[in-house]
Length: 368
Ligand code: SAH
Image (cartoon, rainbow, N blue to C red):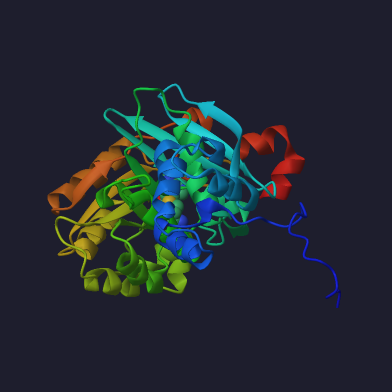
């Protein structure tokens, strides 16, 4: 043992702690333990999250001694912009780089008065859904709280002066419920009035169906729940969303129907990606109506966004219309999501660092 060695607190190899890794509540506790007044956490949150000012030198309501301490002892950034792509339809995709070189993607989607940011929770994804480009990358690691939230900071910097971020959806790369503690902590920052101050109905967490963790998510934070459904029967869902083999539809819907927070005012949101001749038949639509009956829900139909890593195609227009009409007839609330940002590979399921892969295969391999 090298116990006689002094602690190498200034070693560049050592990850310094990051102020962005904490909710306001947990920062209060950390500060208290270190002899800093707990209410300083609200001040820090105001600078880091509400105002987006990361240099403690500019934190004018904080004492000089404390500003120096924050500057010396804590990181305030986790991600840098690697590349930005802007779609003709206004969608902006950011490829962001973490300290270890890992790349994550986030997508800003302006639609009228609303501007939604879609954020990632993991580098790659372990669930390997057969139609999803992220799934084809495999899994590298979870993102930290600071890395989840710095996506919001970096992408907010891309907005014009008249634009304001109104919604955040956890629908980027990765499975949020497999990184649950970091996701919950990051949601607390999005909702905190001194931080991003978003309303609970403005934040949506999507899961492919990690059923045992759904209750824990909703018990911890009052977000919208979205579930990636994609098929009304186990054999088809087993193929598309392999985690269905562990948690089949009966288990998923048993849990969804038992959730106390679900009501007509707080429905479950379902995503259903339509794939030609796979899950877009009239029979599938009828089964879906039966599956959803009595559960307060809204269903988002997403035509498959084709990409080179999956053999599936978008539905024929006539089949999409027939499918949606059958759901409406069955009393299901349906929206059809127009593909956004497809010209920059920013649409649902296309987040796979493809631009990197095309131009720089070496780096894509180490990142994916
Ligand atoms: N793992 C979580 C979060 C990712 S959400 C989840 O699955 O819910 C990303 C959404 O885009 C999911 O609904 C996913 O099923 C959908 N998606 C993935 N690939 C797609 C594709 N090629 N076309 C359309 N939607 C896709």
